[in-house]
Length: 164
Image 1 (cartoon, rainbow, N blue to C red):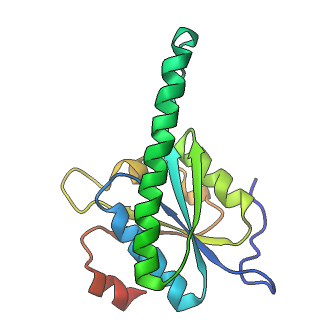
Image 2: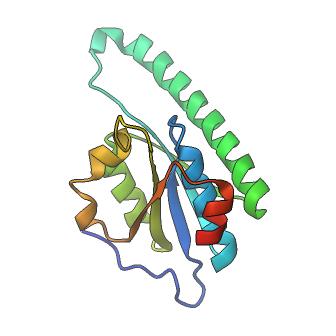
Image 3: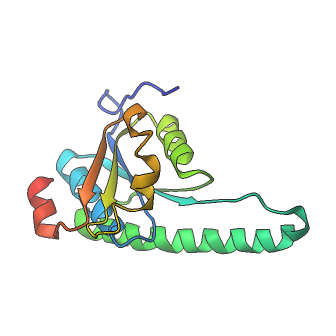
């Protein structure tokens, strides 16, 4: 169940949620979201999802080390994306790290922040398909509580500037 959006009410600021992952096209989503924020006077929430799998209890120590490393990598990726967004739009994006199923985590972040007005994803332009995240959430996107914008990974900065 989704919470009512309040993005454009007095005292609220519309925010764009962008997923920061290790795909090459993720940069295009960050660029578009940053341009959207500067044009609309909004903000950007950057989400990094760490996918978890059931861990065998006897390997709990190893799992904890792997989890700590995953959080370090997530923070490094968010640092890079935040520097990029700041360079584009002179903004300081919010940063969120979540663990679990990507679709569930995206929906939970949207539900927790009534100011998130749009989700931005980027699609891989290559023959291998749009990318793992878009493929994964495509069956659920019709039920999302906010618009989902998919940016082509083939668009240049100038082309995105013209669109945002």
